[in-house]
Length: 318
Ligand code: GDP
Ligand code: ZN
Image (cartoon, rainbow, N blue to C red):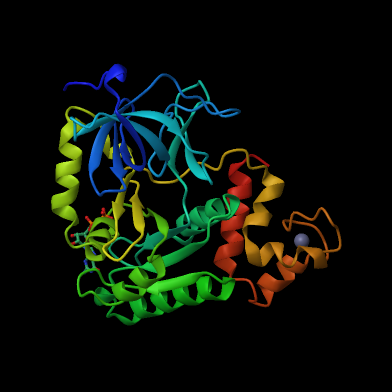
């Protein structure tokens, strides 16, 4: 692949990174074209060691050569409004930035085939709260919930998250039911999608953007060869405005820098009651006169949410 020489630069323009595998990034330009871009020099973010300098969602300034309509060089990254990371698995403590400039997130879950645990949904929601990113819960495969047991479970998922204040959608990517409402909620926004594999993430994304299959193939081919591209996020424009960011292979985003005492801040219904606890540093685990435990007993806080809260705190070693 020929590369643009800096001496040949004739223009510069802003764009959005829709895919990045490290050395190459696909940048969507204002004119609708997609440029394969290298980075110019090294970018380092202050205060955060990351394995990837550029991420999906980044707004960048690209150097262009008017003779070359396919490539460019990323000259700078505009300040990020926010970003989510995944902790790197190696010992270097470097983080991998999954995506940036997000407006909101959805967690896609299913009641059956496979059954998504409350714990998984709650971990995602706790993380999005920590990032201050509004989130919604999408229960997909509505078409198969015909047994009494499945209907009962569906009702309990919807009422649990509704009660806590999360927007919930019940969809079937197969029949199309509920997809228009979801699309409407995503309109003109950048939405991060998460969910266990098998819940229908790809099918939902395809339903939100029917042309997607073709488009992703052509964008990806250029530099996907021989790489584990499945662990990189990818951003898709929605037909009516807005973007959806898929995170294939990334099961959970990292809860970086969260202290056990902070977890309650990210369960809105628990946080909302903590002023009523006797002790102002109440952890809502074993203290007497705890307003949170009382609310769980009276079923004003869903028990599954409280259990998830305890598990997350426990998993942090306290
Ligand atoms: P992903 O792993 O989350 O991306 O899941 P896929 O989109 O690959 O879907 C997993 C399986 O569930 C496939 O066989 C889909 O056809 C099926 N599926 C997806 N959405 C629905 C749905 O709304 N209803 C039903 N019955 N099946 C679905
Ligand atoms: Zn308490």
